[in-house]
Amino acid sequence: MRLRTDGRFGAALVLAVSLVGAGVISGRAVAATTVPRVIAKPNAAMVNTKSELSGSGFAARAKLTIKECSNTGWVVVAQRPCNSDNAISVVTDAHGRFNRKFKVDVCPHSIPASGPVNQRTCYIGNPQPRGVDTMALVGAVRITVTYP
Image 1: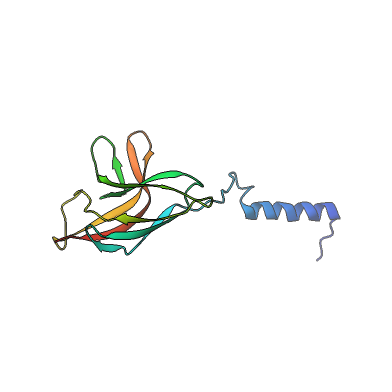
Image 2 (image 1 turned 135 degrees about the vertical axis):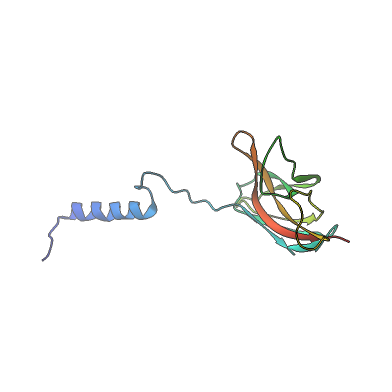
């Protein structure tokens, strides 16, 4: 069985299939953005040493404050998981990327430590408000900090 159509119907069908595939006719538009993330090399370091941070997926030419924290999300009034003395400012390039060295410190305790007593899991990222009274560490990378 063969379905006969005129040229207009065929062109409209091709356009509709293309728009659905692109996510335009799905009830919402699909943004062509990437999720912000930070990569640390090395991701395990001794306190007071430097790690090379590479960030991507952030807004173009945005000024960010990069901090070392013990959590990736917290309630503003109840917790203070970031080491306020250990922060750097960066400005992303036209593609939302940055590269900077970051001196690793020991993040504050958030929960009782488990494992070796001379290391702590910390996160490095850009603290941003989320909701009424919560913060999120955008692009957070997990690092292991060892200390004497």
